Image (cartoon, rainbow, N blue to C red; front, side, top):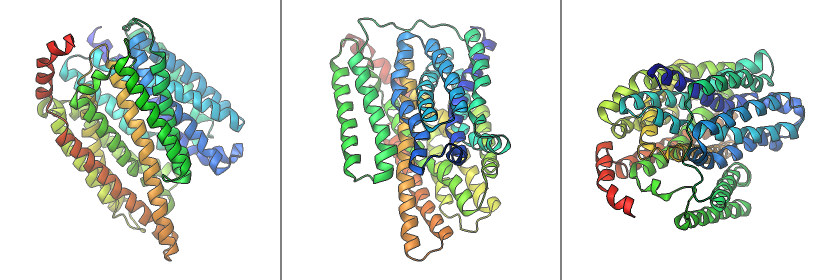
Length: 481
């Protein structure tokens, strides 16, 4: 593929990813309008988000592996087409059942579209310098898309109506699909070989779907110690154990367990889960602080996050490649995690009468600097052990760890924040003060999660040259085994 065509193809792939990432935060901004138009109760409204998350989080790993087996371009195109159609159904929805069902299908399509993109990028750009630059572009889209979604959701909801947050996906999806069909080379995949591992597919998909459901439904509503929460968590864990046992003995496993032998791949996925869980303090609770304490509307919240998005983009697109090339992805990740942790700790001192310029913007810029360095480094490490045959699996795995980490982070931080707020209100604190106290505790927990991620980097992960040398040294014995 000519060099210029490859880079255009990268931007087309990232446009598809951006559409998926935007969809999560855009919907969050529009939820009050959807509730009033379709008559949702508060608990029913949660399913507009939950239906998407359960399908998306449950199918990412399976979709990534299907990309390896059937061809990554084919899976991307199928997912993109389904996402475009289901977005139109969401936009036309005039009842609760239709929008929840369409959101579930959107989640399925989003998983198939986004799960294979990183795998496509690392095979399109095998040269380390080009790969670091390409992953920097992807990292910016994946990390900054959330804040862009806040702005886009505010503009569309206030200027037109909530239906257009879904309709806007239709022309974007059509144009992206047409360009992708022409610019991206076909790949045949490794084929089904001795047959598809249907039992493994059922076990891992069921485990992840039950796990995400546990986090977003019984854990969030009834608490982590409730009987229903423990029951569903035990079921998810039992399905996961059965899947691992199946893959260890299957002749043609759906997910070869060898991918977890790389310390950098396993460590990167653990860091991803911890980091995304902690960062929900910025994107979710930070937005709530601006709205419920400082009185910002949806559009003002979007503009408040805009400077951080610009900083993330500048670092990811312009500076991540030379930083990673010169210092290594692991070494670049360390200061990035420290900056994110420091930013969340700074957010924990934002007062009730806070000023955007004094208390919010500086904190967001510190966080943006950390995110702009961390995510491209993390993606590079997560894909470092992937062969051409396993690239889709590695891509789906890192996306899965992000989704599970995000769902856990949202459930834990929101619950802790609400509990702390309730205690402060019972102690006689004013509502704004009690809310701020709850957010402060959540921000501190988010900072602690970033420090835990840093510990994983320092203890588990290795510099890339050392990891590559060990992998090369072990190749003969590994292939014989």
